[in-house]
Image (cartoon, rainbow, N blue to C red; front, side, top):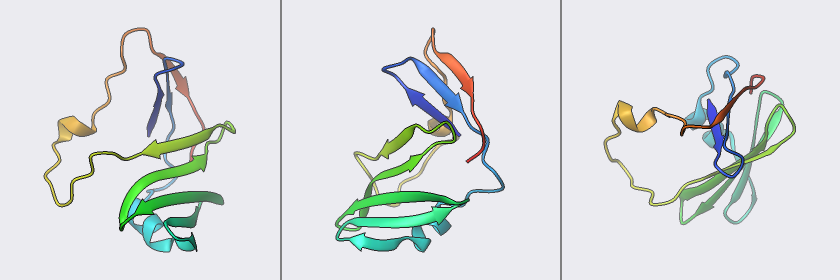
Length: 102
């Protein structure tokens, strides 16, 4: 998994421990309050924020102690995704950091 921070011009490459199944994690989520769920994965708490049944963000603490927020916008249901959309090419000058597993 690659986490990119444009403000710092850094990309952290983190190997996934085992095979992380996002759908399984989402299904494990326990409601904390309206629109907020908490799931545990690999001894980490993952918080999922939703609005009207659509994911808005996922938050967790990375292995280096940093808070990670993945924000979803312009969400489309049941659309085709190309392999190209899932490939990250860091901008020139980006520092690549090898992180621990999540």
